[in-house]
Length: 195
Image (cartoon, rainbow, N blue to C red; front, top):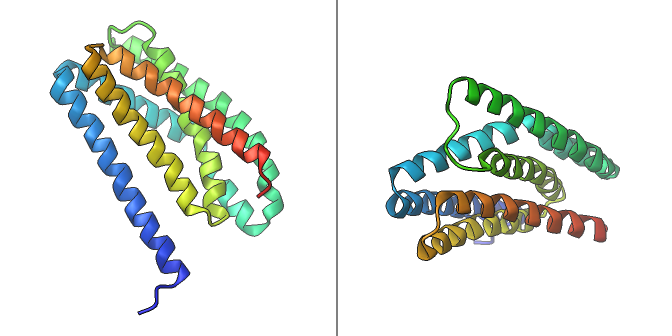
């Protein structure tokens, strides 16, 4: 039986999504097991805010650019404009969530918590644009490698924090910084290569 190009890409997508999900579960299990219930609650609160902020702050532009590039490859130039819009909207959404959280006294007792949230939310929302461009250009394996690298780095960060005896705030800081560094690398890679 001969496997076609579409079947291979579908297989890569299924395996990639499975690996990303497993890496996320491992991260949650490690935090809950070794750092305790309070740290797990703070971590899931952090992830929830990041997901809401990056989803709402992204304004659906990642899906839009995928469609625009599928229509015409020259539309990749819109990516920089979309990135600027996402940057600003993500900051606004994080500020709104912080304001609501302060009203209801939901903010954890961690210095710089909202800075960590902003770093992660902005990085995650902005990474959606290069990811969408890679999907539109049929570079699915590169897309999954980047996102798997992020998840693996998160798990390694959590293991390092557990071994060193640090706190949950160290995990949040390192994850925010790592997302921004990977975003800078991905954007540099996109700028330097002609797709």
